[in-house]
Amino acid sequence: MAPLASALLAGMAACTAVVPEPSSPVSASVQPSISGHPASSVASHRLGLGEELDIASFPREVSGTTLEFVSDGSAILYSSSRAPDAGPESAPDLWRYEPGAAEPTLVWRNPERDHSIVKIAGDIGTTAFVEMPITGERAWNLWLVPEPGAEAILLDRHPGDDGVSSLVPSIAVRDSLVAWTAFDRGPDGPVSQLLIARAPAWEPTLLQQRRAAEAELWLPSVYGGRMAYTEVGYSPERSTDERRVFLLDLTDPAAEPLRLDASGRATMPLILGDTVLWKETDPGFNMFNWGRMVACRLPDCDPEPISIAPQEAVNYPSIGERFVAWWGRDAFAFGIYDLERGQARLIEIYPGESGDNVLRPHVADSLLVWLFVDASDPDAARSELRYTFLPMAGGDRLDD
Image 1 (cartoon, rainbow, N blue to C red):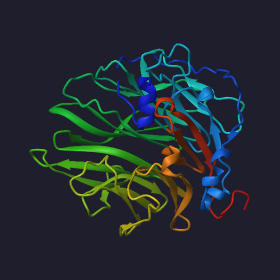
Image 2 (cartoon, rainbow, N blue to C red):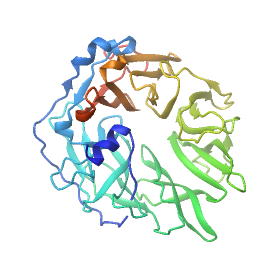
Image 3 (spheres, helix red, strand yellow):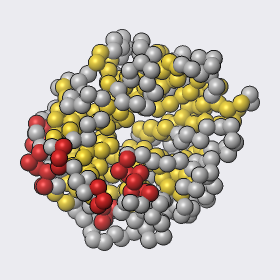
């Protein structure tokens, strides 16, 4: 199996260097054209909410081998190796597929063909992404495409210093704002930073900074002038850490951030209106390990666990206008959380012997996308992106 395909099936991405000049967007016709392929073969496994949904597929022969993908609420954004000159190990280009369109569009062609796009975030056409070389250099570049058809803007880059962590930025995009965390050189050693850029100038603004030896800033989420983010504080010998979720008022960034959690094991926050959710891992586990979800309502924020059924543990949550999705540790079971009903909703269950897997679900607005993998033949695993539009707030069915 090619290295890129292996990374795809493992649900993992890689990191990167050299800063290319911004390139103009390119439209590309992709054959065969698609308007959404019904995923009818899985209908017999649908339950609950899944029986209400029209699920379509984005076949791999059209998308190419996909490395990173997200929903931006109106389209699927993804990096792919489908260009003939991409090579079997890289996914250098950014693509956008709007459900119902005849074909996907090439948003950004990377002039560095040995790079891969390893992180993407978007909101209704505004897209930020991280690309880096696959050859192992300590480097990454963070780009922004403000709207479809616009030229890419370089927002940030790794300084190239050996002492600065090469972990790629975590990114959030909402309306006319991009937020990210990154490591950089500082006056007294490496630092961890929290930054934003706003339209129309898109000039980076530093909001928070910590000495990386003492603390790190991660995983911003933005909604309505407020930001939730994670701060990881380390003991002097870095043998233990405490993970805290904070709320920042973006209309007054000089104000003191408000801590929301009480556990010291909180990470991956999401904010929607007055609701804030985050993941909590078991004591002693890394913040990127599997965990369980809690939620609270502002302004008081009394955290309470929420159901993650049919899962026992989840990771990398995302939030739409009504539903919360996450990666499930059990890839044979697929469910999401309904904020309006306050309960978990089941979509699909597959028998273990089928080899069918649901990986890396992601939701924005009402568009949910995930990777479907048929691993019944380990030597010829088949994968494709699948997607559906979820019920709007106030309606249990799409046509309510």
